[in-house]
Image (cartoon, rainbow, N blue to C red; front, top):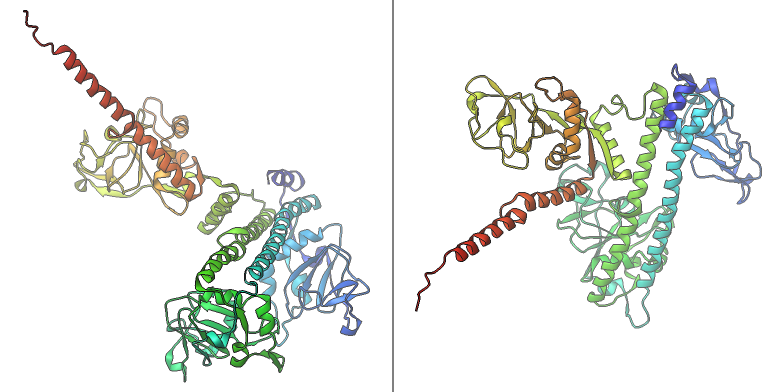
Length: 604
């Protein structure tokens, strides 16, 4: 990043020029090909989506060309590493020496919202070529474009590698799932009709009948798009007045979607393990049973079960199944104890593969967000001529939060000015509301000890600076610059005490910040920046610029726990060295008194 700043200073000291796309490249429209010209070999053909329409024997675009879909998935932005054919609903950019095609790709991604807002919505969404031509983008020198591409491609390449790894893990999960649920011949196999306590269809719920509140419900399409192996909470709701013949499901029931768009996915199933009684929409079959619901859902997702489900009938381009077809599905059925153990194993596999809070999906999501964040930051940097992490770019709270989360995720720790996570109190409190129990001055400000002791001075008149529980009070006049206290009450103080207040406890705990601000490093910084000769005072502005190390909240808690323990061992009279010293002192006194308490010797 610093290299980029140096390059900007060298190549464009007067700023970056903004130009229309049409001023730096030609936006060309592809040439139509018909389906009977396509084959399974040749160059990919891009028409109305990011997925190739097929393959053609010729190419009209060279490798490493950026393109934009003009109809269908209008506004989608792509980049192809190999030669390809752009069809008539695909716009592509003719290479020029002034513009790096990959740089253009990254820039257009930052303008995607603007591009998509200009798409004409009709039966087939369309995007006019002039929308792209009139876009205004930053055009730095080609050397800077190459450097930005290098930085951003590092992120996208890592995401690709992680995605491949995730795909491999999912295949591994499916392999072990099918192996675990394949069983040998000793495990009995049953048809679903033989274990069904009841099996029935739901009742239609239209999109217009879905409400924000009311009775929880599931529509058949949500089984394909929203729910996986199991779920415990419905995303949709409706009102009972909307449903002429309500059909309910409850804990443990298996739901099948019996209408779909593909034979491969028909009759996808999911288990409900929530506590509420819910409504089943139309084209859903509900199966009631006495087995482990998650086991049934896992076994019904195997390739063997899906092959049985895929015997549905195709009608009007839509695939259908039915209650009789569901009843005939045959599955292996071990006893409940084995079902429970299998579920425990498969839940762990599934979590590693799909849980967005752990494993590779979280890593991929974070890397994608990291790419998008740095992409926008770098290109804003280029456009506005700012350095990467200037106050201007991180001034908004949302930007700061994104930055902190990003850097803590990537580097485990982030260094930020104190003013980002804390502020000094300007609140005032009447002197009448403070007394010896809650007034703190530098004379009774005790680091590592309780601050509430009888003060040498209790104010009678005027306003005092107010502090709250968990505020950090720091001596602000020499020789008290190293004295500090983490407040355990509300109260007041004077101008000789600086009151620091955490303003965002998502990123730092008051106790962790207290330890940071009582360190020798902070004291040395405070002394270095103090103002005045005879009686130096702490420089508030400089103090708020002090760089605070912020590890994750979990690590902050561990650090605080360790420091608390050291503090206790060193200062608590009931434990540690003080207790040991006290014990040795009492032992000394005991033996001293014993040794020096001579009994009178009686002479014979």
